[in-house]
Length: 174
Figure: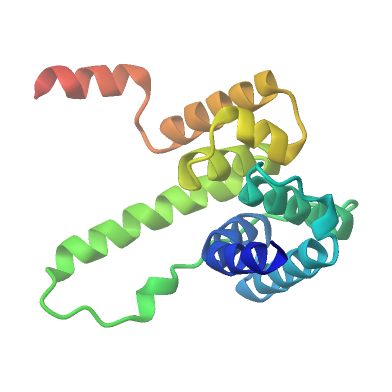
């Protein structure tokens, strides 16, 4: 059983790294956070309940590690584009540049969100966790997940110029 869980943890590493990157301001810190999470998870496998979601359990461990490390200090997260350095052959340079600029704008807007909203947004919208799973992973009530997510989405939409009025108008024009 523990060997199977270890293999599942290895498969979860990219997702753990993505969530760590939403918490930590640099890739180095994110990688350190993933390592701490995996170490704690492996050391405390007896705390994992078989039949429950391993990813949610590890996300909770990661969040708790992050909180423990940075309880007093809150920092803004700057998300770098890891793909930016890869050469793109046969791509329309203008389209790629526009997409990267738009992605940078979204990431900058996400960086400005309060950490609590950013965590929920990452787990629901990026990781695809259900609201209840997110609530369990972050150890918060379900209603708190929904309100934080709604506020994060509204803030992002406003900062990106996609307010509900603008979205309606754009939809009507099409």
